[in-house]
Length: 429
Image (cartoon, rainbow, N blue to C red; front, side):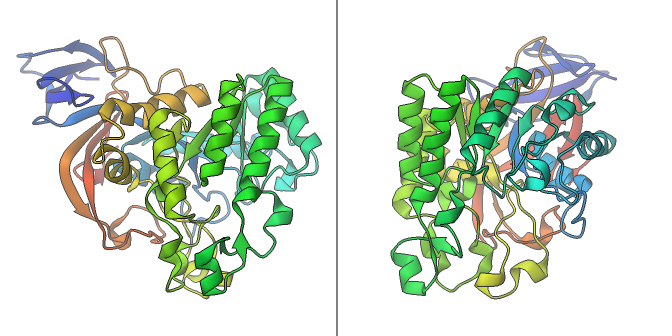
């Protein structure tokens, strides 16, 4: 691999611009250089961050390639500044065995735009009745270290306890979709004033909070690691603060849409705003932003969920929950966290790269921008602005809630171990 120079870049948005020299996928020098034989990326003062890691992506392959594939999802990820994504298990067939997770892993390697890590199901068929082949998936070529029934809650406390015990032995983590199903039968929106006004069945905050509290107690009892998916309520943040203060090995993620949007968006019944867990109140969103800033919430995860037009362009009750998120995640974080002063660029690196890599146990992602480290980077123009058009995104589906919004911050280039995977709006590898 030839040398590459990223000229005039600002690591973490700090200090004067410097040159990064890359050989064989590794940063070999930081500072000015006069190497004339290397390929040059003229950064012009762009911010350099470690490549982003998404713990929560739906790539839909196998089974729903009409909405997304590993290739199209990888393109969207690279264009959004991501260098690693975790593909959720609710595919068809379900990723509850070594055959399926190895297919996803190998297909990701063939595409080569991002590191695709399959998430293994906790229970067979996501049915919540008996544990899936956790050990076999962990020992497979895919090396699964994150397990989740996302889309469904592991509701049985005994099954959850056993899953935590097994993953402790595997040095893995359970990522729980926290939803007490007996409290959300028929639920269509956050239980509150907006749902009442619109005549939509309510999804109460306590349905999430009760499972988070239970699972924090179980994880502490077992001594295992727990990760909470898509936190959506202020109450859940409070429970996580309490659990962490007691030494519980719990981490948690928040989605960009729960940082920015609230249930007032439901007025008009546009199903593009339907998501699980639902958009909560403006007060919840404000509490989540503060919790992300103070470290109660560890990271941002997109819950990128592409859906076909027929599954979204229909009446509210029949619509599938979910939103696109990979290409809009950074701009939403800039709008909600950077511009208000809740996070600086080092904070962005922490919540979008470093912490998710630590949670998933990725040794070569989320690394410092330093000599000897992998050149796995995202170059960001903090002054850039762009208008979201679903039809222009890399995903097959177009279900973005940000259609027509002008958002701050643009990803100019993404590099995976020195290879440029996206540049100037095009996936390149």
